[in-house]
Length: 342
Image (cartoon, rainbow, N blue to C red; front, top):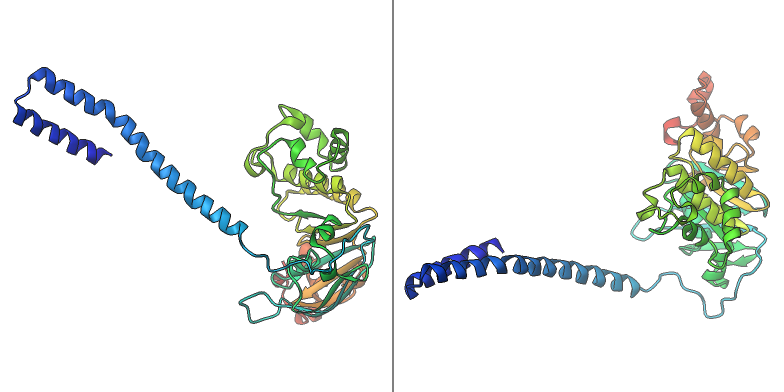
């Protein structure tokens, strides 16, 4: 725009010289050029905004037009009132464009109403297990079943209605606290939303906000702390009241005080539900009914906390590292390094 203005002034000077204009007409012409400068500059910015909008819109429609890789079968039926029993039967899964299996020949029985903790090194297959339960992917071979029914035989919508999910990276909308919690069940009443917030130990900090439940929390909840965001996510799960609860490292980035509050909320939420939790902190798994130790897509160990401590395996070394206990010489020579697990 500045270049165009400079060229315009130069042309105006040539015109004045050639036409032998008076000083008054000369200054009138120059004034007109400067008056047009701002509107022209605004139009140039508008063009940039339009180009960005077109690019964004193209990307959005390309995403909407993408065909899902996981589809409901034509004869898929609705899953209702799941008890929470989940079975992996000789399941092998490999991500696209990879040469190794994320999980290999995995067999696992998850009983309803119990809490299971998944621990292991990064890439051991913990998140893959949750993804397969949610049916974000189908197994390469084998079957994942819920209440004895293959997940491929039920509709994805009805399957996910039976599950609550709390992750480390909580997605919150640029909306009110009330609307963000109500997203767990859109037909929930205001009192049900408040009860869910109380159960998640979120009510006190919510009412302390400038507009209480009607406070807008910013993009992705940027106006809240990490612990507050987590409690809103737990409140959503409480409100949804699904029989299966999946936790993906839900407290790994919190300070000790926030984690204690989250643990209380999760303990209340887990009552009567099937819970499968991924966690790097042992404090999140000490009370689990079963702890599943993963390594390279296989189950390395499985058992209760006290049982696993008696072994010099993955879990024992993780426990020793967490509580700064120095392993014996024989323990140090066996198994793997602690750093691979945390």
